[in-house]
Image 1 (cartoon, helix red, strand yellow):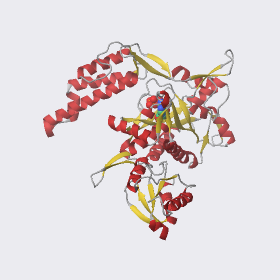
Image 2 (cartoon, rainbow, N blue to C red):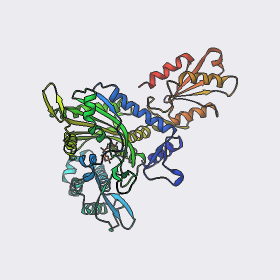
Image 3 (cartoon, rainbow, N blue to C red):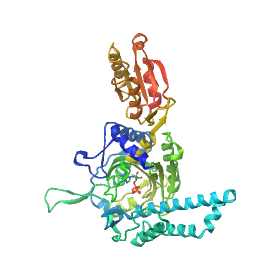
Image 4 (cartoon, protein in one colour):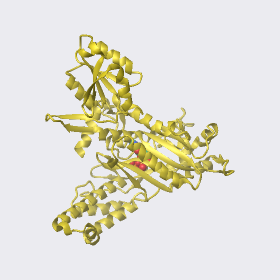
Length: 503
Ligand code: ATP
């Protein structure tokens, strides 16, 4: 698993998808730049989301609100007081950890250990082995499970150093290698606010303390009434937004999965109070359909319904994706009640109510939110696409099987040789295609090498121009995933590509 993830990171760099930010200055931790191919892949994911959410739904409109907002917004939203993560330092190693992540990771390790015990026992007892009975009656396993459950229950509310101590002793008992065991020198758990502060204004006295937004949602809430009135929107309706968000994450590992500057694609759907449950279920279904429409495979997704709810929510679920490091949150669907709008009413002193002509009454709408990280979606798509295939002739090929609709370049046009007018015809074909698709030209190396290069780049089609092309205006078109080639007329190329890549 770790190796797979390393391959993903190095492939992303080698093929111009993702670079460490400020690399020549040794980088900035958990900040990344998207390069020539990465910027295109990101743009296509953005577009695919926007089309599905805004263009396809006549009751959802877009918004592009500012990153900087009035500081009271973050008082009202609860971020100033409660947008904290528990932090713990190890005084020996001088390493800093997010205490809840640490505990969860180790709980997962303990659970894996229990699974092993179960596997061992089932081997010993053969067909007569009853797993449920084993889990219910084995005192050791019961003990571990209970301890994990207690620790996890306390998570998120107030994580204490004792929780870590519990995990530590459990881990020692089970002999699992982890950073907690063997070291006693931990600080107390501190609450750490994740918002980045900045200042507005030049003079020291009058400067105003601001925050870089930690989510795009609040820009939607404060604009709710303006959009509703000017767009003459009727509840239920939604406002969608894509934009940067900033969080001073305590530990930011895992490449672009957890960054300090990232992009969110969020949609707030305003509904009549009392109907939020139905809409929550509807949006869960709608969003998983969007994911599955990309053909990345049903097995890679699962829902995780939250038992512990944030202060603003009456229901919440994550769509989790099977990343190279396991199932992790990719998107959240939250039923946020009227918490945000009511709180903004209170703090701003302005009414944020909707007059419902059918009910003939005014109310603060309830909100169902869908929130997905663009960078996490990028990582999901990219890591799943990267494959190494054994070919019939015994060689392997590295291929990036990106969904064609998301691929940065839709086709590469390759003249078989660099002479005899083939490059000119290749450029003519590119000119025909380039208003509709990103198309690249490649004439270097043998054509087989060029195919491999485009496979690794994720380009779904290679169009090869040869001497026959000059005579009958046909070319070969090679499909990345099947490696099949067909001879087609130059006039047909555009529609063949369009059929696969149109959103
Ligand atoms: P996590 O538990 O992983 O920190 P979260 O529950 O804080 O995530 P939300 O506040 O619900 O995340 O944000 C919505 C979405 O934004 C997440 O599902 C994720 O895709 C994305 N996201 C959140 N934090 C980051 C980050 N630091 N880097 C990249 N994407 C992020």
